[in-house]
Structure formats: C-alpha cells, structure tokens
Length: 512
Ligand SMILES: *[C@@H]1O[C@H](CO)[C@@H](O)[C@H](O)[C@H]1NC(C)=O
Ligand SMILES: *[C@@H]1O[C@H](CO)[C@@H](O)[C@H](O)[C@H]1NC(C)=O
Ligand SMILES: *[C@@H]1O[C@H](CO)[C@@H](O)[C@H](O)[C@H]1NC(C)=O
Image (cartoon, rainbow, N blue to C red; front, side):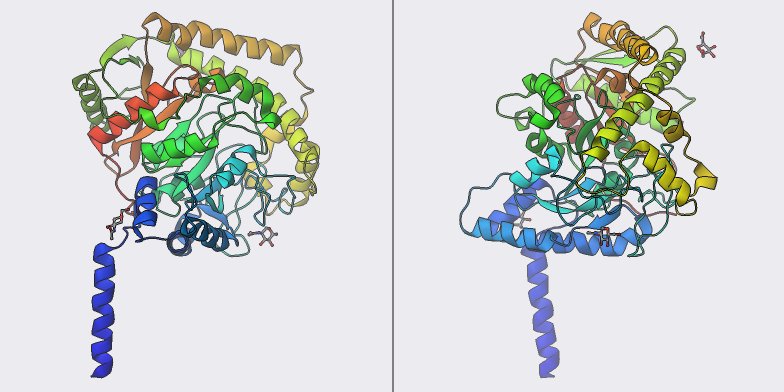
C-alpha cells in the first residue's frame, strides 16, 4: 500500500514535470535557450534526449554514423558555464550533428562515409566545426552520407559506412516519412536526423543539390550559402569552386542561428571566404526573420520547373496556392520567364561541363585534403582506388564499381579542356539565370525541391528550401528560394515569411 502510494506520488510528480517541463520534440534553438534560462532544461538532459532518439531510431533510419563519446561531457561543461553566469550565445549547449565529411579533431572519425578514411587523423577541426565549438555548441556526432557509399553495418550494428562511389546509393538509408522512399543525398543523414528529432540542428554540405535535395524530401529547412560564405577548410572536398557548407534544421530561425555561427573569414580557405565575407551583414542574419518578408519583393517563377511531368496534381495545387500566398503577402510574382530557350538542353550542357571540371577539381582537392592529414591509410585518390579494389566486398565493387574515381584519376589538373568547361559554365550562368534576375530585378527565383540546383551550383549562388507539403504517398516536398551571390538576407526574409504563413512541417510518421 505504502509502495503504491509512493508510486502514485512519483507518477504525480512526473505529470507535473511534464506539464511545466520542456517539450523536447521539435524544440527550436530559441525554445532551448528559454528552457536553459528558466531552469526547465539542461544541455545534459537535451543530449540525453537526442542520444535516446538515436538509439531508438537509428536502427530504422541509419542517419547517424557515429556518436561523440564526449557529447555528455561537453553538455556538462556547458551547463557549468551557464551556472557561473557566463554570457552565452544562441548555440551554447545546443547539440549539433555534423555531416561525416566535416573534420573534427576529437574522438570522432571523419570519413565522408568511406572505409578508406576510417582511422585517418585530421590535423584540426574544420573551420565550421571550430566556429561551432567557439559558440559553445555540443558536437553530438557525425551524420551518414549516401554518396560515396556502399553500405555495411558498422561495428555498433546500426550505422553505415563504405566508400567508393559518387552515385547515389540508398540501400540502408531510409526516409523517415515514407521508408520505402529515398531521402536523397548526400547530406541525407543530416536531413533525416533533423527531421526525426535526432539532433537539435545539423550541418550538411552541397556541391550540386546535396543540401537542397535531402532537406526538401525530409520536410526540413536547408540553406546552401553563397560559396565562400562558410569555410570549406577541413571538409572532404569535391569541387572548391562549388562546395558550400550549410545548416539543415527544422525551422528557418534555427538554420539562421547556425548560419550566423559558421559564416566568416578563414585563413585556411582564404580566397573564397575573403571574397564572400563582404556579404555578411552587420548584426548577423537574425534581423531578417521578418513576418513581412514578402513585402516589396520581386519573385520570378521560371518556366519548366513546376510541370505535370514532374509533379502530381496535389503538389502543383499546393505550389499554386503558395505562390498566391506570396502575392497576398506583398510580393510581386513574375511568371512565364525563361532561364534559357530550352531549359532541358541548357541543364544537360551545364551538367556535362560541370562534370568535366568537377572530376579534375575532385582529384586535386581530395589529394590536397589527404596529404594534410596527420595519419591516413590512404594518401591519394590512387590509394583510395587501390583500397577499394582490395576491399571489393565491403565496397560492393560489383554493384557500383568506382567509375567516377577512375575517371577523376585520369585527369591531370585544370588544363585547356577543364578551363574551357569552366568558362562555358560561367558564360551560361551570366547569360542565363544571372541575366534574368538582373533584367527583372528579381530578389529570388522560386523552384520546387532542388530542381534549380545546377544553376545555383555552377554559379556559387545561395538557395534556401522550406517545407511545402506532402504528396499523396506522404513524401515531403519543398519550395526553394534562390538568388544571386550574397542574397541570403532577402532569401531569409522570404523563407521565414513563407514558413510562418504555411506552417507545413510535421514530424515523420515512419510509414512503410
Ligand atoms: C520554460 O521555457 C520553455 C520553453 O523553452 C517552456 O516550454 C516551459 O514551460 C518554461 N517553463 C517554466 C517553468 O517557465
Ligand atoms: C572511429 O573508428 C574506429 C575504427 O573503426 C572505432 O574503433 C571508433 O570507435 C570510432 N570512433 C567513434 C567515436 O565511433
Ligand atoms: C530541348 O532540348 C532537348 C534536349 O536537347 C530536346 O530533346 C528537345 O526536343 C528540345 N525541346 C525543344 C522544344 O526544342
């Protein structure tokens, strides 16, 4: 009887805690900071929540490749710092998950999802990781990739690593909304983990669509910043001309907090970050989270993206409704404009020239990354190819081969062919999207999901994707706002106004 009374008392206490306590699911950075300051939350409790989510959900989703053994210690330190009255920024004590191609100088491996890089020792944190640490964020772990990967279960039985291909491989990665459906890549782990509340915020990287695509298909917000706005130092590279590191989060506001923390000059990525640092606004990006963000904006809807061949009626209706909503909120929407006379043709030309430039850039920049490592089982792309040949089963060479690696290895720097391709890309961009935007004085073009990605990729332009709806099967789709270099402030204004007016995001239901 006494025992029963005690039990009831404990249950009543728990109920009180639940009533006045912190709501962990869908917690935003602002709510987390409020929770810290009103005493309903500690960083330790928050890390425990996400570790528990990872333990429960990762066997299903494979979004997290490694958990940081020091995450709880970092959380405890953040809690101590707060208790001593230290002034803390918005990411202080906030657990962040990094895509596995972003180096951390700690007990975590940095492998870009590959076996070849397992055990390699990085000389220092990646520029963006160092900035997150300086902001007091907790490094929760690393997120899986689909690119680069053939899969096998990792020693702990629930993550995925493998390493020989550039094609999308989605064998073990699942979409948390509809599990039979691809979550897209290659920042899939980051997007899936954000969607399924396995981390507070995450970082992804994009060379051509790798933030925008998985963010769109997992009902989260992805920002692909202007190339150079965020440092790529210490990030396993593909193309320094196109690579960009950006946030993948559940809300625009969260993504903006992360963006504020990671932008800026880095001596180890001096040229690009030096050139882009002029775009960083005084006072940061938070000031652009404006409910009236559509007011006075000029938005272009280029032909060829919102078509029946790509989307079902339900999606097209949602997009039409949302475009109306932009008008209602004060935007001037300009439809029936063309990026090119023949969009398909130009896209094909862009992709083929991008490929020529990218494989040569990949060999150069990967070799530079590998030679900078303190220790590595592989020191060059040639070593990686040999490593994969020596591990054909783990690397599933029979299924995927390693055609891009072999093709890249045959290149010999940026010669006349590559130079011509890069010039062609620049000209197509200048005569295409850039000219269109200037001609109509556009603040953004709006496209579905990542479908405009190649235009943003080859020109180093920024884009933000925001949840827009769910198709008849329940697969999420997004709306993407893209603009000229340095347009982040106005893209954030529109993305935030759009998010607040639509409120589309829902937690995943893990449908089969
Ligand atoms: C503390 O703030 C959180 C929001 O982050 C809220 O959910 C909670 O109810 C607040 N608790 C108290 C005791 O004020
Ligand atoms: C890093 O990889 C090594 C080798 O597989 C493994 O023993 C170690 O646990 C990994 N680190 C973490 C934090 O998972
Ligand atoms: C556009 O280009 C594609 C690919 O080159 C071609 O198949 C198609 O017929 C062209 N469309 C038009 C309307 O010219």
